[in-house]
Amino acid sequence: MSVASRKQTRPAVTRPRTEPKPEQTGQPPASRSIRLSAPRALSLPFAFTLGLAAFGLLSPVRMNPRLLWAFGGAAAILFAWNAVLFVAALRKSRTLTLAILLQKQHYLQACAQGSVLLYWGWYWSPVYDSAYLIAGQLMFAYAFDMLLAWSRRDTYTLGFAPFPVIFSINLFLWFKVDWFYLQFLMVAVGFAAKELIRWDKEGRRTHIFNPSSFPLAVFSLGLLLTGTSSITWGPEIASTQFFPPHIYLMLFLIGLPGQFFFGVTTMTMSAVVVTYLFGLAYFAVTGTYFFFDSYIPIAVFLGMHLLFTDPSTSPRTELGRIIFGSLYGLSAVLLYPLLANLGMPTFYDKLLQVPILNLSIKLIDRVARSEALRAINPAALGRWLAPRQRNLAYMSIWAIVFAVMSAAQGVGDAHRGQFVPFWQQACAENRSYACPYLEDMQATYCFRGSGWACNEYGALLAQRERDLGGAVEAFQKGCGLGFPLSCTNINVVRPGGTATFATAPPTLTDYPIILRGTKGPITDSTPSTLYARACEQGFPGTCGQGGGPGAP
Image (cartoon, rainbow, N blue to C red):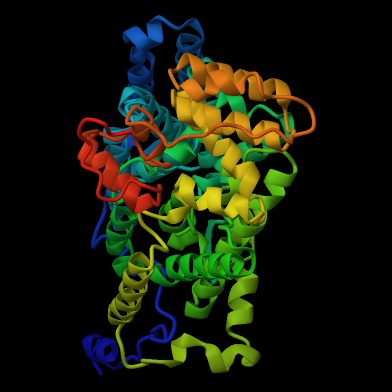
């Protein structure tokens, strides 16, 4: 028998269709390897480091001494590392290899994350203002990754891998410019963890942790323990990501390509559904919303699409991925009240758990393959389908689920929890956490310049005897903003909480502030539009108002 014949008749080793590869088509058809002398190879990280140092010439960097030191210090460390590696490589006459590998997993994820940054930045300008900082992190990431790889072995794989890491980190946490050196340190921790913390996973040596979620979790824990969240833009990031219109739909759509190619639909879908069902149950019991202004906060929804869904650090079984996604959703539900009760910022609720989940994937796969769960294993269904056909089937189910949730305002821009009338009614009925949340809403709107909100906030504080001094300050501010009843109510505040405070409907000056909910600023503030919004949100006496002369 010829060699060719033996090759044709030799049985192929294939994976069962019941458990498709998590990184299906993640590898390109070919890669190019270039063998280089040490001077030529190390000129590449040198060039990236030089590019990083050049950011010191930019005006925003040059004008801030601490930011300048952050860029200069990071560049100096990389230059020194490059020099040491250069000398060591020359002494050992090393030949270094540059392997060019453009993985679909990396560039598709980067495109999705970049799209979110662009769309979000259109409605919140600090994203665009920080573009040079993101570019600087990319320069740092490439140089650091190359130097770390060539310090440990002779081959570095060049591709788009740093892009999804940097974009993902910047979708969830930035340090303010005075503390920006910590941003470089966070990036370094992510790439070091990917290179150094590894295990054997089904016969293959691979990294344990998602290289973006691991540093996010580590630094989040450090910020919580030290009480220094104020040196980051974390709270602003979590809230302003809801500013763009139809952002839930946008995230759903940009997640589809990755779900098709890498089979991560079950993780995202299970995380979303479990969180949503918990929210429905919570509302049925309490009459209020667990996350107050949504069933699933937009930053958590973003994490369910673009943070924990790395196929390399998730289970390989279909049932395992459903369990993995469900655990992510449930952990966000558990972390949110835990952080709130500890007096800590709640925006970490989607960041802290991912490394723990990454560590659990082998156990999750063992449980998913157990005899006890065979009856509910979705891998038993549709065995005849090819992997991508199965992905399409799951995507179709997910599309139906998302459409139903959108129609029911489970996700979307018009959730009732954003709006004052719902919380006024809930507070009047003494529902769980309703009055404290209403106070927070009115305080926010008062700070933004609504005299009506200041009056309502002052009345809430005084009637519940929360802070009589604060009530007086709120009435004084409302008076100064031109809401006349606040001027009267200043003299009514007294201990005992039995006074009756004068109230009136909001004015056209107040509506652009109080009608936005937790979305971005209202751009169309014509009277007819404002009254239509107020009517939709449930403000009394606003339906049918034309906004002409004599309007309140």
